[in-house]
Length: 164
Image (cartoon, rainbow, N blue to C red; front, side, top):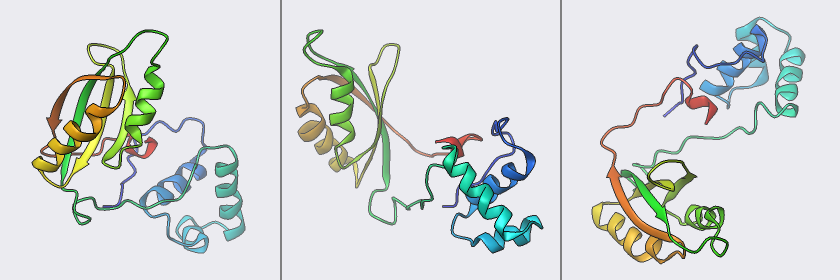
């Protein structure tokens, strides 16, 4: 799946040429600098320098790929809401979240406000695998209290997906 760049993404810190470069990089970061230069009708060196400047400013953090989790055998996608459990001062929520994020089936773990302390994005091979992952792995982490699991039927990237 190629992540598409949406024109509604807030890029107010960039000029028009940098925005066009970011659009191209977001849609296909494998293309050559010359290919981008040709599409933008700009000299290759200028495009190269602008990309380097975007990296130096920390706007472009890395060039990567999107893996197809289904093709790799992880078709089930879910979110687990979790509560922190422990004594204040003895168990840090950040440490708990870091331990959760190290589990091989976890895409990400967010510490949030509201009824739940954590939102954990996960993948699994099937429902039994998801259940085993929660019961055998997640529940074994010190600081994880009760959980609620939400299985995702469909997923759609939002306009700001490139900012992830």
